[in-house]
Length: 252
Image (cartoon, rainbow, N blue to C red; front, side, top):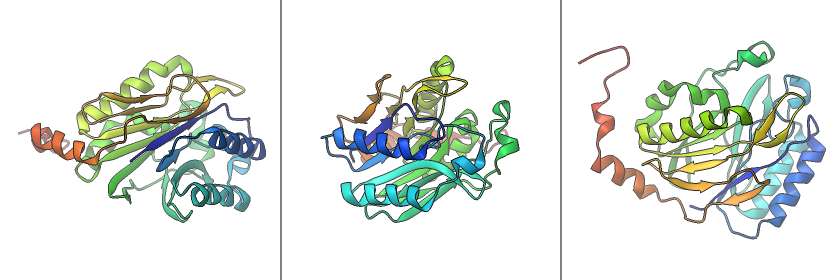
C-alpha cells in the first residue's frame, strides 16, 4: 500500500482557503498513492470555535470528490455534532469510519469546547486493520495496547506544536515498537495565532524503523516504499511479545 501524508500550513479558520491549498498540493503530487492522510481539523487548524470548525456539506463533498478523482482512500479531520473527529473515506468517496477524539486537551480548553468521544475504533482498509487516533490520544498508551491484537496500523492526525516535536516523534515510534504495528503520524506546518508547527509527519514500521520522514516541508509526501502488511505478522511471529502482556491492573 502506498501512503501519502499531506502536511501544510493551515489558514486559520478558513475552510475555503484550505480547500484551495489542498487541491493545489494534491495536484502537484505526481506520485501514485492508495491512501492520503491530512492533519487534525484539516480545514481550520486547531480552533476552539466549534461553529467554525464544523464541517459543511461543501467540505464533505470536497473530500469525497478528491477520493473518487484519485481513486484513493482519504482520511481528514473536522468537527461534527460537537466532536473532534477523524473521518476516512473509501476510494469512491463513501464514509467508512468516523472516530471521535477520546482524550481532549484541557491545557487548551478543548475539554470545555468539545464533546468527549466514547469508543475506540478499528476499521478495514484494503485488507489492513486500522485504528485511528487524534493528537493528545498519543500520550495514552493503554488505548493503543488495548487495540493491538486487532490492529495492523495506527493512524494519528495532529496539531502538535514544534516545541514538543521530539515528544511527537518519540511517542509515535514507541507506539510502533511496543505494539509491533505500523504507525502513521500526520501533523501540520506553519503557525496559528498561538503556536508554531514543524510538520515532522512520520511513518514507522513494526520494528520502529522510519519508512517516511516528511521533515518540515509543506507538501504531499509519499512513502517511497510501499507498506507491507505481512511485515506485521512476521514481526509478531518472530517476537511474540504481545502474548506476554499481562492484563492491565494485574500481575502474574
